[in-house]
Image (tube, rainbow, N blue to C red; front, side):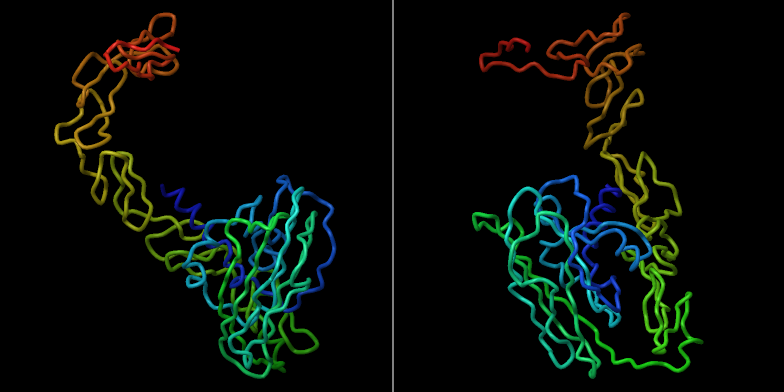
Length: 365
């Protein structure tokens, strides 16, 4: 469960690229890549090299993968959970392709709600047309007005349709985000203030290395963002608060060990296996204890060792199996095969025989 939650969190934050990607200049991107993706359907992503420049970690970020809009994009709370896009962000490069199928697109919404702070977003391609067959980049630019500081809300809408005019499930994409604009001029002491190996250029502005942002390159970027109150202290490296661990502070540290197979998933919080509960999974749901090393799997239901049965593993004798895999409802023979109990069949005696309505057994298949 903890691992699955981690994967879901990573997926959920994967499109927070609008808030983590930093670029002072977005060069024109109109060339085709020579490589082909292994899938052969519609995809939209940011490539590894660009993500590495912005976060210090090389990884590909998908919005659409093999014809499917990823679930976190379709989450109604997605836009509300995104942080404000920092002032250093001016544009983001995306890569997309249609593969063997044909798709048509339309950017039907590129709007700024306060043009005194932020001009309407622009794209480096036509607002409508056909998605290229091979991988091709385009840019979304977020131009501040240049003379007013503040935070502006802007909207981007993208509709993608099949050749027959049917929208791709999950589209049109409708995203409303917030962008910070800050009017910053050159600093005569730039060469003394650029941190983290940033370089002061001839215009007296700091040029930051991969994974850093800010007027003086003082802010490191972590992707995904540090969880549970962790701080990004270096590109891709989170400093975790007490009680948490992991590259992104996603894992917990339990002062006391989780019992009965439980796993520590948050600070002093255990995820229990079936049949157990409590802060440390110390309590069993089986009021009558399981016998012969059985494991509680539910309310007064035990998972028994081979050769035993009953709610509490009280029936039969424990089997010392010579089979590579234990017989579920049967006995292991000297030739390493299972002899099944009445009503069961299969190689491991794990398939129950079905009965007709009159009570007779159906023939085995």
